[in-house]
Length: 200
Image 1 (cartoon, one colour):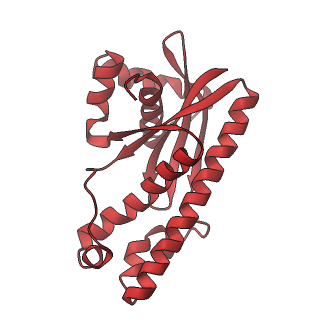
Image 2 (cartoon, rainbow, N blue to C red):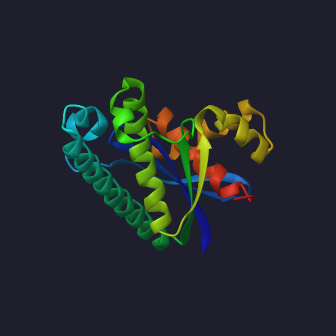
């Protein structure tokens, strides 16, 4: 079977998911999808730490844990569904490329809820972590890429200029029609990089 990778760009409660393979050195998009990481797509669940700030300490911890558990389950379900579809087409999903922020470890819950900036960061990290967890559970090799360094990393690994990479990423979504969004372009580049980077 030919290898494929899936890339994600995460938002609050959802993610752009794009599967990519490489044929004759060129990336090919196999599937694209917007997946939900919360069952009820409302602010309360999409922004769990913002919601937890209004709760007692005990309730806040339990609430965030429930949202995290649900996000992991939904992420794993989406990856397994994608795996099944790709297998029928002769592809084995082997790698996962995920855009991350700074990569710094978050402090305990009490300190997070005391800082508006950390609350924003923690909300994003919860859903990114859910995808990493799900990828690991599905047997994928995860490559984490700092979003600010994506083009630089891609340029080094793919040995191409930034402009050439951006041109190719813009073109590969054409078979799927418009819109080929920025989220999908970034997710597809993360997948391409995960599939190509032999160091991971």
